[in-house]
Length: 640
Image (cartoon, rainbow, N blue to C red):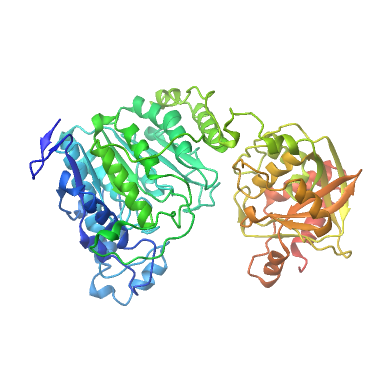
């Protein structure tokens, strides 16, 4: 369909564009720099203006949401707080209230901006639903997909997208919008949107995000692939949780082709709303805070990457993802800005998406790269999870069926080889044997085999992905070493609340620790390292190679920079057995100092974790059950 714009210019589609500088009134109360700041939307608008985009769109005015709109997904207490937080009566309490919330700041302009952001997404969604517009982009802030029903969170005050979706479904049923697909491609999980439509089969919520087994913000299990909805909404909640922070265009597009698009085709949405966060761009360096002005240079900003996201999606990647979704719902698509904190990257990404909506020539890019092997694991795990949750009494059956797609042609990044083909470093390290010495839950063979074969044992809250080489250990033996065993940290993502085992890397003849030695390949040792440090992406080069193996015997320990945030990134050399090096992985000496000072907590292990240690020691014929309990008790109570 071709129509005339206000200037008589012919355009192919009626595309809405909404921007209102009043949303810039929400800012840090002290004026300090914060990644979620007014410059984000100013930079986007300046970029689009310089490219002549607004002149080709239907530019819409922002409108404040009504309380009844907000109350459809938020509690009355929360709505009242945000409505009044900018009033004079809250001047003395505003900072104190914000400090009690998760990643929130508030000022005298926060209320107006929050109402405008939510109301603006309603405005564009309603226009698209009515058919007045083919599609639209709402450049709004503050973002919304973290705002819980009863609490502001993660830079978000109201859930703008959820408010708009609820409005279409519940307040404007005559528009015929009975099924809504919400796609959240922000690098962070849309925890709030998931909760708001958890039991609603009218909304298919799809979120692809960094998760890293619950360690990446919002740092919980809500974004795991097993979270699929409940009751009538069972199967209408789809999470794709990245295991690492390096996923890029190829990984996202593989998930689009193998999960999202087949499900969207079966679901048949009447409209698509995208929680359009642009914080999944690569982090090369952090762009400085930049004062935006009205000059043409304002949009020519660094595109180095996002300081909070750290993935590798390009503007071209976003444009292709959007283009693929244009085939559904007759192209009725609404994009609402969420995250994205590098001014150049967010501006270029929005510009790329506007080109798609306007059916312009796409921005330059390439999709020649292949996904990581971890992407295959996520897709495969999704299929298994969907199959296991099948329920003949619900409508979820058809959605699950379309997930059973052919994946045999999926290629991986390492070496541009077919899935399962060994990479060169793996072939080399598969020929080298080491003894991996375990002092914690891996002393129990069944637990350790989870790292080799994949899966989980009783007490574990998450399954392990396993090693690429799933052959069992060639030999198992036990030895004692003059090192101190202790327990620390408040909780772990594998076992939940309670401390986990650490071995002081310093030798001390006053102590004796029992270690179970597994003879495995150096390739398998690398995979165990990855999983132990909650970082299970396959890498193009090993974390610990033969050069490291040669040097660790002299240095006695090698701290791995690539895993520096992991608890067990320090590889310690414990000698040799039958001429084969004995290695363990534990914390660094500096971390031991922090445990001693109290900066890191010392804590006894939880019963489930303790039981694995007892089983290992007893089944390994090292101690009786009572002796094992006493050994663990002493290690967890004796002063470090």
